[in-house]
Image 1 (cartoon, rainbow, N blue to C red):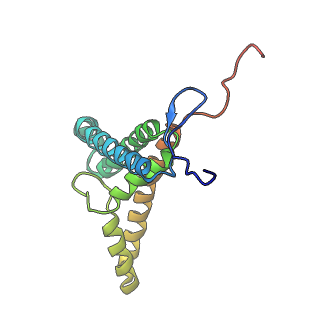
Image 2: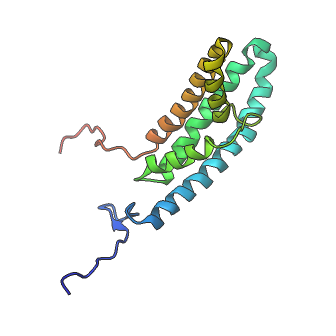
Length: 172
């Protein structure tokens, strides 16, 4: 049988761990589903268990003018931590897992829970072509959403395994 089809299966890394093959669509769906579930569980648990209590504790210290800035800073930390966990658990295809989770963030308006609102950003973009008054809000929303997505991707990059050998006092 010269034309026998070789089955696509997970390959074994030198460390002995199984690495899923992204050419197989079943593995892609598994990585995407796992990343989405882990990402939402992490993001919501960090938001409700860490971010909101910290925001309530710091509210009297910061004052009314700094609440939005503190909320954005805490959200950046939450997105970076979520990205790190997604990157860690979807190794070696962490970028694929991060993009799958980021795609779920762009669909709906999560404004009461998260300061991320991509549908509102699209609406602002359309409105800014009609009226100049919307340009300032468009710039602010674009920058805050880009910062949050950047924190997510940056945290995912930190969750990937390092490629460099650690420094040693002894040379081998």
